[in-house]
Image (tube, rainbow over all chains, first blue to last red; front, side):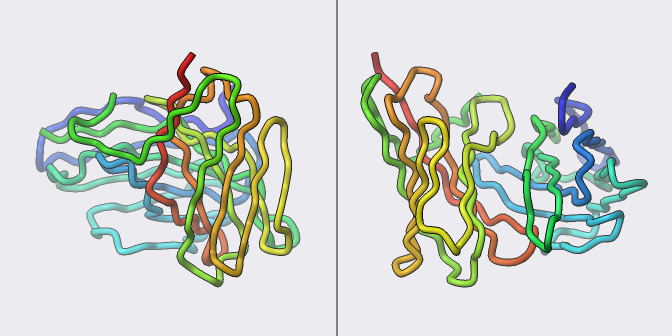
Length: 115
Length: 111
């Protein structure tokens, strides 16, 4: 079983479209994240949810909206896609124990190409 | 696949030798550090972590060293194997839950 799974793996879409990426983790973790990796391999955090509550919201265009229906799922919806949104998006999860973060695990990524 | 024109720092290592990958981190408030390995087309894979109350931690064939005085982190891989070829990232946690990644080092293992 994949610990952190994302769908789809590849997404090619036209500018202006709206798309969603889904993420599920079966690790029983209480925190989930979205990261973006650009063409230079630079990884940057976008959002984080802890027990369904938004706790990290970096400077991301408001066309990006995360939604966490439960602790095991964190989806990313993107409106009005732009060429610059092309990147690989990674979901991750971790568990909190004694106030510390453990088991920070990444999914295999969703390669988004906007044409 | 790799982007055209992408130039990560590269470490070439002969199979069987030890590798040392270095990382300078930026935030003196960071209290948790993780090394990840990323193979082409895959997500970052956890290798080893260390908290700021330690200066050394060992795993299977890997050792992480933390020098808080100069904000430096290193990953040592013993007896490097072809399967160790990948991009390696250090990540620091300047605040709870947030990971700030370094630029990455491409490790190439030659026979």
